[in-house]
Amino acid sequence: MGGIRRESDPLVRFAVLDALANVLCPACKLWNTGHGANMMREAVSLMGGYGVTEDCPGFLGQKWMDAQLEATYEGPEAVQRLQLSITMTQELFLAHCRSWIRDLRQIAAQHPGTGACTLATSFQLWLRTLGLLQDAKDPNGAKLYHKTRQSVTFALADALCWLLAARAQILDVLELGAQGPANPALAEGLPGTLAFLTDLCHVQSARAAGEVGRICAELAFGYRPHPAWTGESCQACYDAEDLDALEGIIPGIAGAARACSDVTETGADHPAKAGPCASLAGLEPFARLRLKLDGCLTGARLAKDRAAEALTQVMIPEALDYPV
Image 1 (cartoon, rainbow, N blue to C red):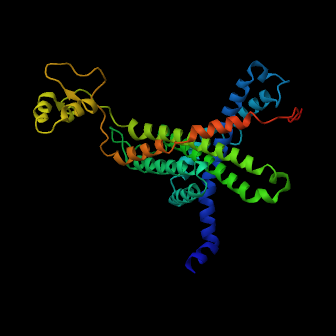
Image 2 (cartoon, one colour; image 1 turned 60 degrees about the horizontal axis):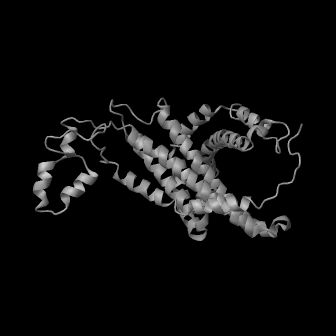
Image 3 (cartoon, rainbow, N blue to C red; image 1 turned 30 degrees about the horizontal axis):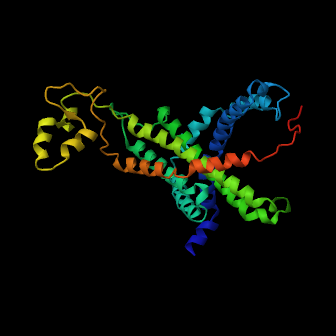
């Protein structure tokens, strides 16, 4: 009864919808116009010089130019990122994210080809990175996650947009699968359409995972000073003589340490690099989750190949689709 009462409470419903709208609205504007303009540029480039002429099928040149304007009016991209950097940290929205992770795991169990499991892990990595940055400071003691530090907040906002877009795509395909058979115009070729769109979901989820992994790794590690060849940093290095002495007690330790760690060889210069290997201290859970995300990309390229093969079988009628 308590759960039903809370769901029917208009104030609770308002708070839930407000938390979602404050994130989804700027994310939709930022993603659709920004990413859309990039995709239009690629579409034009596929056609070569023909792509910027009025005779090009689809009027790609005009649509590409329109996309540049859409990215600016009704709030330029920087404004949307600024709003996202504030609203996406609200606890009610973060609770939604954690709920979405559970939902995506369930979707993956029933529809593994959608890439929903990859997306769930990506959401986990994003949440972990946000938590790390909100608590972390740079070497000068300044907070990393701050509204004036847009190199951090804006990057996380962009990463979230990748996740939200891929999630919406998966949910759309699932809705099509549920409602499509009742539509006579869709029922006949629905299985093939669903297979194609499912592969596209997998491809987009993998692309989102790659972008999120890159952004989160740069933010998690990028604000830690790289160690140099100083006495303090070299305390973590192995001494070659000590390793050789331990070899008699622990066979193989010398070779293993030289393969994966910094070793100070007697009478020799330091290895030809900037400094000792960076430490993962404090970021081991992040590194394990990032490694798991890389493994979640399994099968993504196979899905892309299937989608590309399906596209070669599509016939596009020559028809004007852009008003003069």
